[in-house]
Image 1 (tube, rainbow, N blue to C red):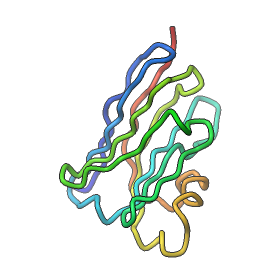
Image 2: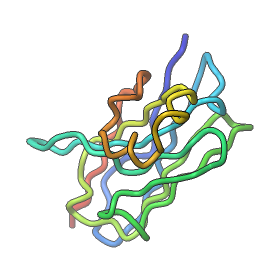
Image 3: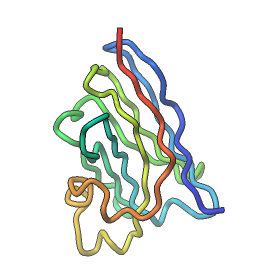
Image 4: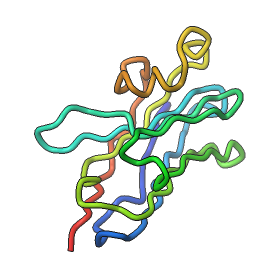
Length: 133
């Protein structure tokens, strides 16, 4: 079965850290661009961070730049999102998603991420991140 499974969410105090994992099964992640997106209650989905399949280029939303780091371990077929210095406004359901690498031939990773995932056609079920004291 082709699927993405996120894990690593939870409740953390402001200033804390979490590492989200996005594990692929049924296909090989290394030929896909991967993105992390989030959606808070009452808000639109937004691109948090995205990474290409080829040259490893990355994009970060301004709101997370310097605090979050995206990485991929192709041997483990997994992409990670390390989140440090978490803030209450980071509270949301976080989703990972995959887009065929061919999309990156016509659109940059930054554009794909800012479009909130419309080019990504395989999505995980999401993991809740709550930042609260």
